[in-house]
Length: 255
Image (cartoon, rainbow, N blue to C red):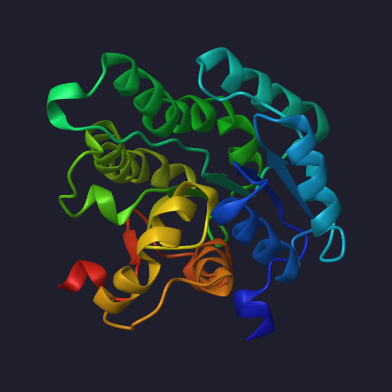
């Protein structure tokens, strides 16, 4: 079982890895034996603090990057390529949200959210294809894990650009899985439900008990829930999973 779910020797990059779901995933990959986990975030100090926090679990290396533009994605890819010939795991987690009533929803909210949530995973994955290909074998593919959302499956109101970007990311995941599978690179998506993160903090503070009561499992997601699915998809246990969108939501999308 250690071999089935172990990540010994693997090199990973987790975007948005300084907090929330990204930090949960980075810690899980290290605890499963990953040799190095690079974490990126827009703020250098947050990135450094997260790397120090993760040091007790393994080697975490901060690379600050603003992924809201193609240039930022290319810069991060170049920084990783300068350090590593091969990249086994890419987790596209960096994201943003925006909420406003339909009549007031601003155009710049579409650009900000779609650029980071949908365009950047495409640009970064494309830029890191040489490193992913170098790590890939038929028996042990390289892995791309896109962090979507159950909001890309269900129909919440007020977050129009967010839900659209996450639904788009889910479908982009399937398209890339079809294209990159023959190159021994799997592409899957995780669709989290309610988890404790900065993006969800205000909502959970105001409505946490109510939200938990609507979840069939009657609780909010924990860090090990997110770490577990990331380790599964990254390990030999998930080597034949490709093009999947996996809800990790306690059953919310089953309602």
